[in-house]
Image 1 (cartoon, rainbow, N blue to C red):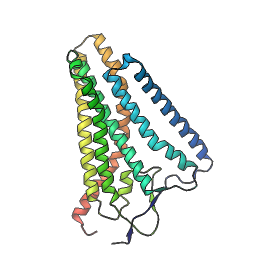
Image 2: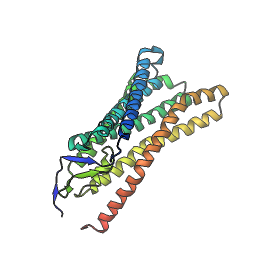
Image 3: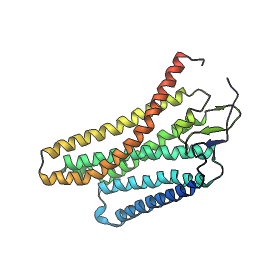
Image 4: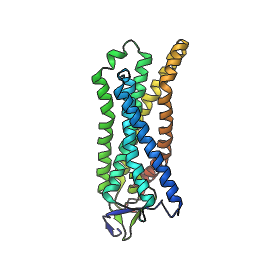
Length: 278
């Protein structure tokens, strides 16, 4: 095996030399970040203050907005810092911290959207039983469950990645502007089969436990709406469209990210089985 060592830093190689454009991108990201912070904080504040909004649908949306604050804070300040920095080296600790934050954000977001689809399903398909089912205890559980699940799953992912070693005597570079687990794992020279298998299991489990319930919920909602009055259809449309828009945006991001990841993981597993000594 090649000489291997534990590196203390990674280099984010995707920044490159963009000259004076870095100030434009820095300003743009700063504006985007503050808009995200102000918009989400404003909506969260309104939901907390206005008692008429203390309904399950708005409380679940509040959890979604809090998670968006968490995710954007885990990504955008670092991007702004490295845009203006002369060096793009990131410590091992901060790299794994960023991986943990971004992965927990994405998984929590997906789980929150699944919870919101369940809430819409119960509200539209079972309106008479809705208040009996969505008790304060149930609501608290549905808000906390995505976070607990996401933090637990990603703790295992990080623990598996921390054991990896990287070959050679030169600085390890990540061809991105931020750290993500897939980019780190594929650079390792130690055996990554366990990481790849666990990654596939988590991806399959997370998608099956979120996307299938979401699809089922909206299929049932659509069936109910087709048999209902115009007023019921309008109500379902008004309450579901923001959720559907969020789903489409998140699914587009996840699809683009996981497509290459899954294909590469499967290729590595097959290669290890066929050529174990390579």
